[in-house]
Image (cartoon, rainbow, N blue to C red):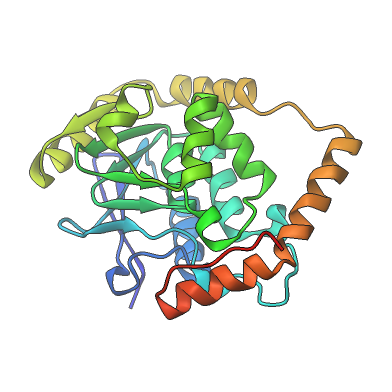
Length: 260
């Protein structure tokens, strides 16, 4: 069974995450299907894309598939990570991508929503950045993305506390373009926004999106800074806290972190 459903009409392609039994965790298999669907849309006349979950789900996406995190303490390279590849694919598309969000959005799924060009969300949707609950150091590229998308103090609060924030709270910071009250309105508002974009000049929109992406890319790190950040990440990946965080998640208990 496919993990992502694709439907196209009038230059609008809708991708629906369809792995609710896994809370739409961003497994390598689901990510591969998303990337393939976006790549296909690049050549089939799509002018705008909507990414959503099945209506009525409690979780839009639980974020990175925890079962695929390394068990040996090795630091996965962000460039080869399929989630990072998905983000680069979305940023490189010639068409805008709209996230239509209801339910909970956790961890890497928050990054996915922020990578989309526009966000339509139910007021009750919640967003939580959760690596600190697991003892996981978030990759530098991902942190840079949050820092460029959110006010710095808000990004710090979300990372340091792992507390969820509602779409309504985030809308005050310009993160959510449209707030809606229910599933019907979510579908309607996302499609209305998509139809407006699809009716305009696709080449001009594609050029403007590319310009915006280039202008908002993070400044390159110095080699010394990169080496320092890499050493901090390696320390966290190899720590007892990382092993404790993963074990606690698997055993459905609260972790006890020691800082070692």
